[in-house]
Length: 221
Image (tube, rainbow, N blue to C red; front, side):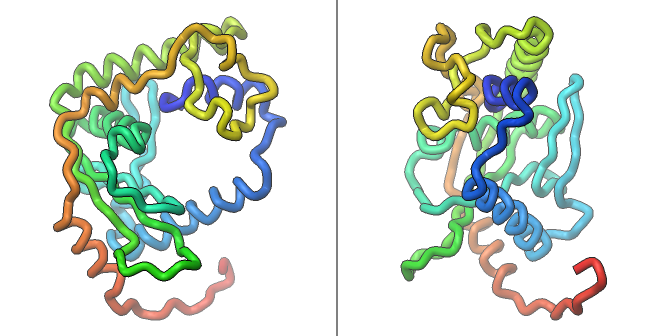
């Protein structure tokens, strides 16, 4: 919700609006991938850890010593992560602030492609956050903005959505075209070092190719 206040507002105000089936299929595929990937590289007790701070709740994909966020993409891009995917950095920053840890990792995995590629379909980043206090302050500010907008039924104080003119599900009801509050990534801008983590990448690739015992089908399957 705190990554995109405008969408969070309209998702609550217009629950009847649902993403098209094609988008939901990608979401379901991503959920399935998270489960398979997580079980391959980590123990179950560290997967999908719920955390809470200041009446804000989050769910970290993998959390043992530091938060690790796993993302899937159709095209793997090794360009500047802060410019290419600032929302990834923002989400990790919030999780780091919630568990009071000054660094975390982002793992991006390319979904299966029809085209063969020599490049391994995975990249890992190590990101530091030297000012967790400032991140928590921004989180509380966004929390209060969303709560007030929901109470007043007025989204005018919320920043413009990053998905304006990019197939947003709420484009028919939103006010992004007329809002005066610009889009910003204040939490991402608070990040310190963002480095490609080749060691983590190789460790994850090694775990993914390890032979695993076959799982018998059970009644729940």
